[in-house]
Length: 204
View (spheres, rainbow, N blue to C red):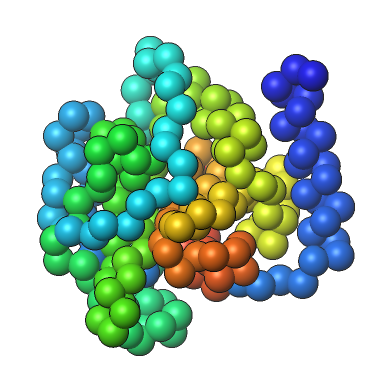
């Protein structure tokens, strides 16, 4: 089955599932510098559930995301999610991770550390090259499961990949959002925080 047809079919299934599903639903590096020189402000060791697929290098450039970590998840939102979390001061996206790809694409990669358990939550946001979006979505479909409770397709396409560190991918408009953490053992564990992120990230 062609890739586009497969993705369309999966999205249709996700929409149907969303009708029946009940809605369920934060360390930080500043917005990255141009590709190859992301700033590394902060040390998390969270491992992504999947690594970025090998894709051709886009000929068109990414767009600087123009967001800070405190805009992606505000201090009030973070506290409401879990008051034990605070900025992870030594965080830097791990080489080969989706968060590193986002930083290289002039996005913002953030991490918050649970002061009690030591668990880290990473959230990264980018506006990738337009020519790369379809490939990113197809890779998410291949490695993850559709999650209609993150938002209704096609406006919001949400995916979750379980693992030792559960990974979320959300596509909305020109934005690509990635989040992962060991505390995300199932889609609903990430849903409350993803709701806050989607409130903060522009819709187009």
